[in-house]
Image (cartoon, rainbow, N blue to C red; front, side, top):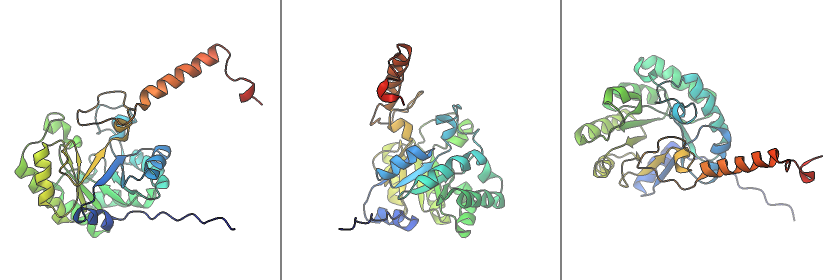
Length: 269
């Protein structure tokens, strides 16, 4: 008998992600910064992959997300875009692009879609970014908003603090929705506020430190995998301990090399 053909995997689309809210289906999203990890996360069934500007901290070792550049975001997003077969891939617009005028933001977001094989962009802000979101959507660029704690505004906000202004959060999230955003990340708010914002919107909310009432959840993949070397937020749950696994394996390899146990006959030509 001829071998069975592998069934092609269909990529999730923006309308399908939006429809998951009304269908009551929870949405999963993780960050990804390279081809290897993106391939593994995608094959595990994650709905969306976020090439986050968090790579400034997770990959580059900076104290906040501000230093990462557009060129660096495109470099990492291209790897993730090639790896993903099923997940919708979203790319952060790095600081301060979406504050440099509508034209420059559309040009930058257009470059991301053209050069990375990714399908959408994310920008921080709500009511203050409505004009930019509308222009991007008009240009055919799907947009995810981001309200609550906005890491790019860490200095203006006085640090990474829980956001508790329900009226402002609803105003920002609704403005992003009305401008055409297909989803909104809600970061670092009390659980009851995350739920209230979610009930107010027609589009999905993706929570991070925002409780179980959001329509979906996102985490930094390194945090979720136990691969973080620095501070881990209290809302993170690690599902593995890969960091210690790597250290243990490296110590064993170093010892084998030092004691001439590696390479042995089985690992030599």
